[in-house]
Image 1 (cartoon, rainbow over the protein chains, first blue to last red):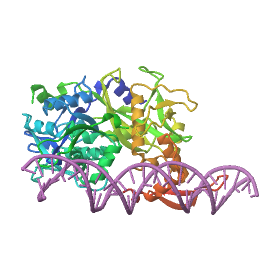
Image 2 (image 1 turned 30 degrees about the vertical axis):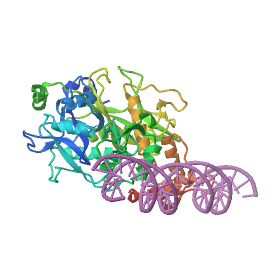
Image 3 (image 1 turned 45 degrees about the vertical axis):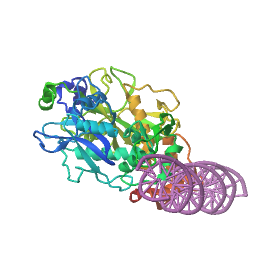
Image 4 (image 1 turned 60 degrees about the horizontal axis):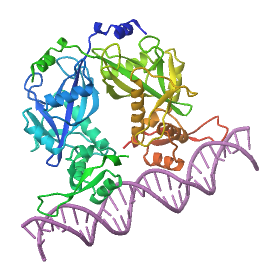
Length: 243
Length: 243
DNA sequence: TAAATAGTGTCTTTTAGACACTATCGC
DNA sequence: GCGATAGTGTCTAAAAGACACTATTTA
């Protein structure tokens, strides 16, 4: 153990520490497409650009707790499925000072997503263009509903791209698809969510067969209402069938 | 934006910051089993327990750079495939002070692993018992070669368990298996590595077929030497066949 | 030629894609 | 009954597991 390590270990106050923050990638489905919740920066630096909701981590606060607090305070959302994504630590990622940021992925059902948009937090929805470029995923770009690009602040484009990549990677073997749906849903809705995340269409019969075989869905007995045609059966996520 | 957020954003020096560290899970294959490199703690707290090599992140140092520096300085290893794993931020994970740690997964070929053990860094090898409990993976425990358990310091058992889980998850669709082998290897060696990571045996014919079909392996034309029986063909990882 | 492992062939099972078909609802 | 979508049946293709078989090398 060198002298500097000894000091760093036992008197770390003697060394300058990076600031530690969390940033939230809040994803939902909007008009059949994957979308993220962004805030427009009103101040320098990067004023006018779009940023992920974020905030600093308190000295006596867990990372998860900080993410939940930002979800409440900055996004005005009470609850969401949050999961740690990756920690971004480039030295110059924020021009003000050294900030290391732990990125979180949050998944919102369609209603919660719309509610967050309507709330007073000033959030806007960025539609994500997610081309199907193999399992690895291609580039992800954020834009308005009619296609105008939304320029992202700092390294937030990288964070967003990684979030989509992670979501895609987990789609086939975890329950992430259900986190974007209401408690009761039709198989068509579920398929649409999967298609939006993949960026490519799915075969209907094979999809339904797979969901059934995995034991992930349970019939509720109820049916859709208000359709102009044959109403579909409503299912719910069956947590017991996970493995 | 509340008053406290404003202050935290623009005068973060006014708030106490967590210390930021990296911890390295260095994995390799030893006697056909998955093993990790650990350091025995000589001081309080948790003296006598086994810990992952780690160190603090410098104020002008990338997370990846900090991990590489710890790899050199604490483990005496020049190069390894390092990949960020997860960030651990429980408030009381270190009794001395608040330390948030970014865990890294490092994969070492068998020779590099043995070399690191023989080096003067004081590293010991902990054999990992990795039972096959479905894709999710069961509990992971560290022990000596003859089965005596090695108690781990802090939350390092959690970090180790997550590292193995990640390694398992990536085994089938990335090149992690090759990172644990020398440049030239036999298909038997490759299969043994996969079996060690899975914690379950693999079908020979199916395994070879899959590796071939994916274009991951390229014949070198050379053969094993020094065997008491038919020598196997040597292959190398074919990076071009990844996707 | 015996021992031991390398490497292959083939049958079966599972999973997914393609695609047409039937069922059922509101109007 | 018509329009539109829900939901199913079945053929085919691709991938994986089981397992026996042949091949090749050293001693």
